[in-house]
Structure formats: structure tokens, C-alpha cells
Image 1: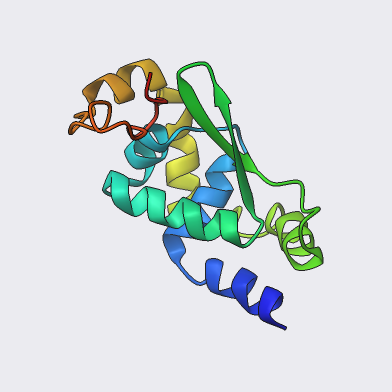
Image 2 (image 1 turned 90 degrees about the vertical axis):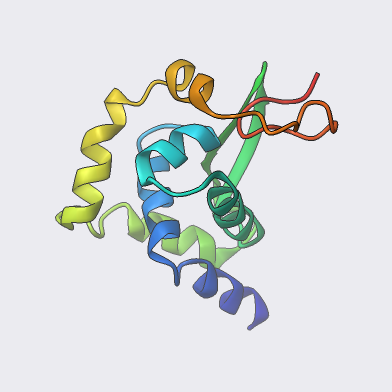
Length: 133
């Protein structure tokens, strides 16, 4: 039951649902998600961590970028079922439609360049999108 509750809790926040709906279109970095949702980078990162812990989202390093994408559902039958069904849900929701409509205009090269680094590289941590060198 604990695994089921973790997935349900991950889906209990509207911004997490929006993240999943955005990731249905393409993999995205934190800065792109931040730009699409209009919320702070630490908030996006916290949401991604909750979604990752629930088996709904995975990430991969892509050169300097960290790309987030929908998980394949192998880690949990609950996440697999909900990810499959979520593809068919909320298509007509005005909030979802609005952010998905803006997605083609969000360019990572532009939005990530605008993000302040806040010393993440010097501290040896990942910045919002790029892996520390």
C-alpha cells in the first residue's frame, strides 16, 4: 500500500500534474519547466524529486544538460497505470492547454542562459539545468 500512496501523493499537486503533461510532449530541463510553469527553480526541482521517487519521472544527463522525461512505469504498476491513463486525461483543461501551447516557444538555450547560477558550479552542485564541470 505504501507504494500506491506515494504515487497518489505525487499526483496530488497541480504543478506536478502539469509537469507530467509537459513531459508527455518532450523531455525538458528544469529551466524549461520553470519557464513553462512560472514557478521558482527550487520548487520545480522539489516537484521533480517527488515525481521521481514515485516512479513517474526519470532523468538522464545529456552533455551539459539534465533532461527529465516520463518514466517507463517499470518501477511500479501504479505509476505505469496512471501514466498510461494520464495521456488521455485533462486534454481539454484550459491550464494544461495553455502551458502545452507555449511549449514550442520555450528554447532551453535562451531560458537557461537567463537563469542565475547562484554559485552552484563553484559549490560543486548541479545548477538548474547543467551538470557541474
